[in-house]
Length: 501
Image 1 (cartoon, rainbow, N blue to C red):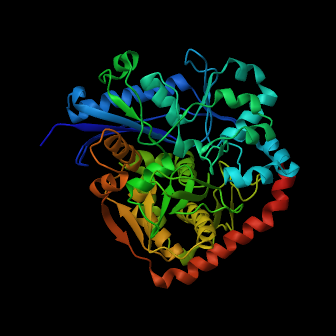
Image 2: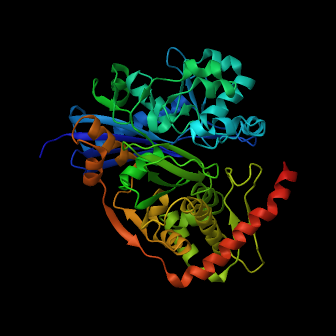
Image 3: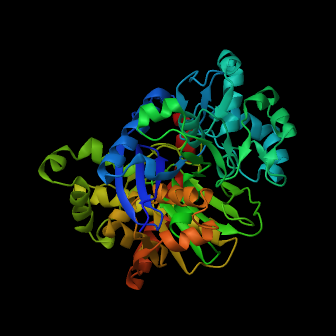
């Protein structure tokens, strides 16, 4: 068997991951490290871009060491990462400010002004998505208004994956699946649109947008500087890569319209692919998919597993010390309460939501007899219900899927997966791979280096299903009742949230 390997990098909401794969799809090793993130009460969410690159260098060296392979045998590299946010560099390719993460809310007011002015309605048929504060376009609007000196110093406006690729190669590109979700492209022409930028008041920012590239294009090779920093070989090809929602979809085997993909990570991402673009202002976005002829239709919000991360970090210190794995402890505690035994409702809006720009997270229905286990189960279920709201929106636009392919940290919890299956009353298919982001872009690198003729072929080789979680029909009514309470709580609190702000 030939010794040729593919390296995938995945820069998510909280962790940088690296995965090394044989060209036949066999995973060899993984490495990961946390990304420090800075938050403040004004909704600003940033990360030091130099630290981010240093963390990538560390996990690259670690994964190569773990696998025990010769870096010269790594024939291709590719990157995935969170969509949107904003990473600005100057003409010397140095950061001009901290990177902005996609849950950032600083542009909330500017976006509200554009929505009321009718600009969003005018550009919608071209961008095919509803703008949100942490997206490229609103952030550029905010910087134009509040920090014009920073934009004057900037040369390139990049997404996370484009910044990491820039660090690897020294070349700036905007990968298509990523930039088509940024609110700056006319998806009919698949190019940047000057009219869109002008209407949003950011026409001068056109010079910041990098040349567009396809996912499986070679977008440079590892530079001498990056080789020294990562231990990789200078000249190794680097492919365009994917936005994380695409990387996970292709890695789970979403190559036709029969299934949905659900990603439960920092964001609640729920999606399917379509041969026709679907223009609905009720959805988050329609974007370019990595398989020719398909669009990705997505609804989501920042309401998923990061809410559980917060709860465990803030309230599980004793269990963390007593258990080898805090997540196993959390699973056992949540499972100890049956769904019909507690009516506590949790709204998972700690990091924002698109149900209401002013929404806050909260628990409802607490009584003195409730325990931490009841509250923890409510956190699990609240995240499930947020996904269900998005899934129901998608199902208004097409027939019910045969199943849902699931990705994200949630897939490590069979207890939680069963909640999803029961609340949605649909089979949940779990991938055999625990690191879908890195595997998805390893497939991209495989196609870019001509190891496979297409992503469809690569997906057939790499993607495998570990197990299928079937829904318990007897749980349908109890979850329907709790979900109705969840929806009522949101509607009832809107006036309270407005007064809060």
